[in-house]
Length: 253
Length: 182
Image (cartoon, rainbow over all chains, first blue to last red; front, side, top):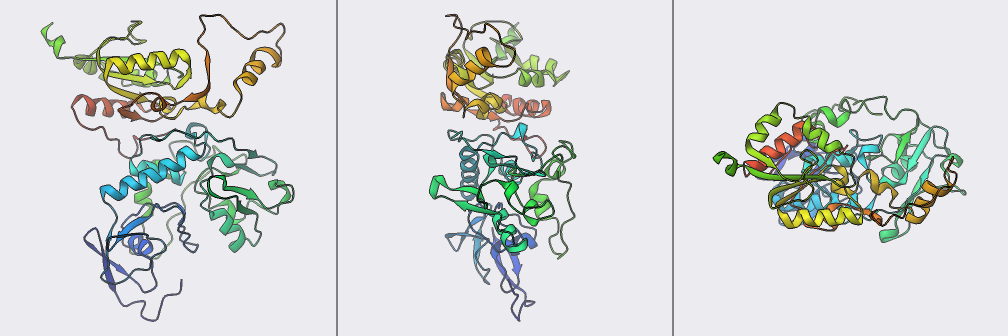
């Protein structure tokens, strides 16, 4: 996203009645986060182009629902975000994700560092509400250093994007349509061991849930000392509001 | 004794659970005394009363893995004004539900007939044993559940906060640090 010539010309829109400044070319979500205003999101990652698939960052812009990660900020727009209606819709989206996969947090290595879990905590999701699907999904332990647990995939495509755009390896892809859509490994055998994935790859770093796991590292950081144990995702996401510095590296397994 | 009539009557049970949530309830430690000023127990593993009577609050740990679990849950629902699902198993099936992608017959055969070290095994079939369900279900698959308290187990402080809110007639809320799914 290239800032336009008038990037430093301060302009504002309002979010829940309060002014949010933005720079030309900035999306509503980016501007909100930079201003310390948290909007729940899952598939958005600051280092990648917006994807707009999880819909968690949906806001009402001049009365119309839009994904704030893909919508450019415009001066004078009125944005609603932290309203009971939108929070309830976000809770439902998160509950859908939980029932569609197998998210058994007590046995997950990523518990405490999981974005899905942290967002659900922030939204106050106390239960899944819907009937769980309990799908039958495989794990792939073929790679010497990496375990893939497909039970937890939420189809954000961050690993797909990282592997293609940063690593240049195209290790991951989505296959199938609708309810059959699922993450696959781009190898003739379908096995991760038969790809060029390495632990240094960007694709290893971006999974918001517990699908892509480094072997033998699961509990290096104990439960209780993990990323979202100390601070909520809302605090972490808005910690660097007003500065362009990257957030401090959190301890993650 | 008159004060007893002011007390809320509470029943608790563990279905397809490990009693870990009950242990976490006991972990509120000396606050138990304060709690017992305000509630009296009906059916519960703590009283060993076997049948649930009319109650203000039913606290159910564990999911539904067999026919008896369903029977007990329905009795709780009939008798309790407010029903609380406590812990991961009651909320979403939890650990027992990890068998849900497996066939029950295959499970039973592996455990009782073909597993390592089994000689002259047989699948238990005493008529007193409740039949396993084909899948483990969370409580809300079968009855209306009024409140959910997640966690494996929920921390004692979360249970204390939740019960205090409920007893005070407030909608229970858990902030960051008390809400846990693990």
